[in-house]
Image: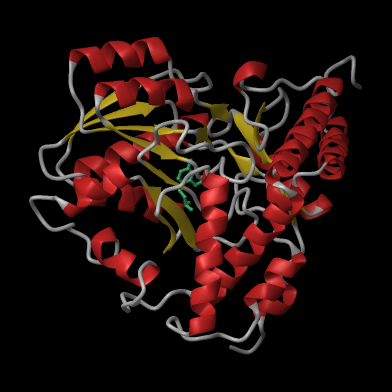
Length: 381
Ligand SMILES: Cc1ncc(COP(=O)(O)O)c(C=O)c1O
């Protein structure tokens, strides 16, 4: 290696679907001296991480820990621990991540019913009620904040129904934790997971997850062993809990320092203040986009504040916008995923970067690009 590529990494403003910007003190935290994974001081840090995660997840669940890996490991861990071959699973799908859930559950031999809802609109509780009356499912799964469309699903209302039906309830909170309220206990959610690289404003690499006592009982009483050694919660809990800690796998120490600092930052700001900051940045963004005549993909009442989807205007492609923003304005945003590719742009106002100033900086850059291409709507031109 002749030249160190790391010397030339651009300082981009990350306003995509994740990873989001990282606070300087979180970067600093990750450069601290590495301790052993069973060192008593590191155990203290672990205890605080569990406490912070319970606070943000809105839960008293004893088993609330970060897994080693990105958000998808949270999804894998959720299904692999509770599902056994032949179990019935209902996946409520209105985007890419609902589809991923179906894939993960099917690979474990679950009998999956995937109910599809129109992308860009939320899951419809009345339809879920019908499905729960028609059949009994071991597990019902939904994505709280669907990152592929920018829709927030009515997880609380659906949680009540799932609870009454006596099924386990799994909620993906990857794009919601830390940005909008998450209330695992109030929603009757049995399992919820997230990722560090969205509203927690930490680099990608850990997946916070929480299991209710009911979910843990199901895991403890499985007929067969959890088919994935690394993610077996029966074993992992011996490292994360209890008086005598037992090595399972080497914790990613520096990642844990980063997560600790990210949680510290949010709780110091106050989680309600943090949610309000996300909402203020979102409102500012929407005002700016409307001023320059752009259309948002999702109706106002279903929009996520932290992930905004803009319909690509006529006369320019998503690729042109994304590359000009990056090369000329040092702003990184995301393209549409799957069937939304080419149709929408995804703009994240997540964590550290969720500010009105960043919303303004993005809108004015976008306005200049659209003006230069002659495709600003008339009233804005
Ligand atoms: C809603 C949702 N679930 C799961 C994932 C998967 O997370 P990761 O890419 O960190 O593995 C993502 C990633 O964007 C997501 O947005």
